[in-house]
Amino acid sequence: MFKNKIIFFITLFCLQGLSLAQEGMVGADDDLNIGGDIFSDFNEDLEESQIYEDERYYKYGRFFSFSMAIGFTTWTGNRGMLYEDLPPTFGLTIQYFSDFQSAWNIGFAYSKHNITLTYPTQGIQQFPTSVDISMLRFYFGYRYYIDTSNLGTAITYSNPYLTARFEYWYEQEKISNQDGEVEDSYGGVGIALGGGLEFPIKIKESYVNVEALVHSVALQDVRTIKYAPATKGGPGVSDLTGFAFTLMVGYVWNW
Image 1 (cartoon, one colour):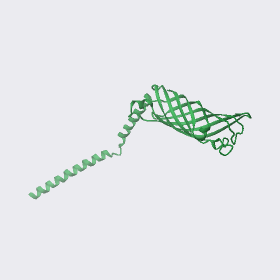
Image 2 (image 1 turned 180 degrees about the vertical axis):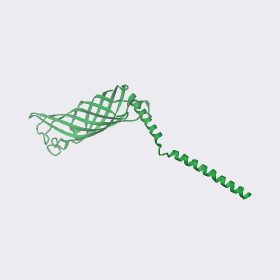
Image 3 (image 1 turned 120 degrees about the vertical axis):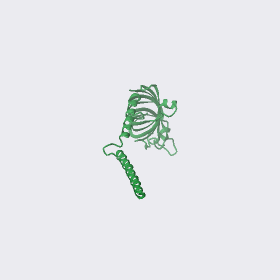
Image 4 (image 1 turned 45 degrees about the vertical axis):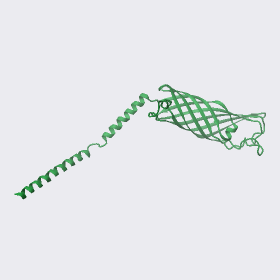
């Protein structure tokens, strides 16, 4: 009799364990149901977040902008030693915003410079000589607007950004002295890196832009000896190497 009771309780215990195991397997099957989508909740959250971000951009973001700027351009190195800058530099930019932080732009800038020679060089024997130089550059660029949502109000208000450009420079040179006038032209490609600030006058409609850039340009006359010293130790420069710097202030219209 006692033995039968033991067998009964062991059987009952095993049946309860089997029932619990089956319930666990059913729950697991529900979680891994092939007919369902285990990523559906994640996708729904992602889609809702993207929709919210798109709605926020359409409500508060900018789409296109047009700007006109004025400033100055100067050079370093041997070119800077020889050049006298003739401000102002003029610029024009058209820009497309792909989101709050990314913008693509095209445009051009124009600056003038002058060289006054009161001494002979290897390429120019007659003096005094005046050399008028105009530089036109076309560019395609990218701007990254820094996320300032967690920074101070003053920084957020200034809309800081970093920028990079691919540029093509076209240089015209007119040499004038007692022998007459001689004109020449050169081209070259380069890159520019820098940053800027945009202060809103009217949110989403108009801004004042301040931008600083450093340019590295491979102009065709960079290795010229035209302005090299006529005699050893004389005045002049051996080549026209150097970097260009620009500082521009512009007015921006947005729509």
